[in-house]
Image (cartoon, rainbow, N blue to C red; front, side):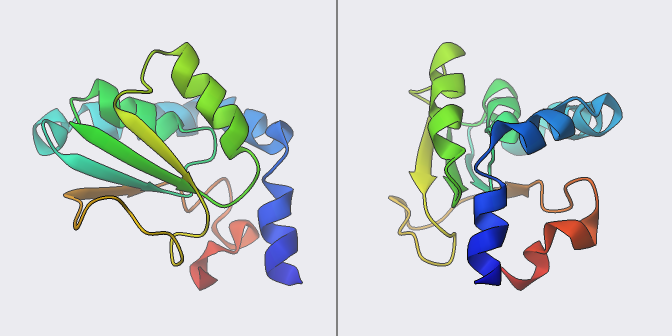
Length: 129
């Protein structure tokens, strides 16, 4: 189906590498999160469509108490390795599945972050999910 194709297209690291190497874009996300540390400090954060978990790691560095990172594609396996390599596995929990279908281990979150625009809002086709 089209939805399967969408999520499968994000399973490969190449598309994530392309987005992360867009330094203007990545730095804008970093600066927005790090520049709002007061809003994140001690909070529970949900990262929707976390990909490689870059926003999750920014949120953890900004002082989030815990980050729940949800990703439907197979890139989540690489994200786990990245989170562990950065020593953040105690503050970031990665959850494999669609955000609409997963059960978070908490009743509520304080902050939601998402890279839903990607590098072209309509290309990502995330408006449906």
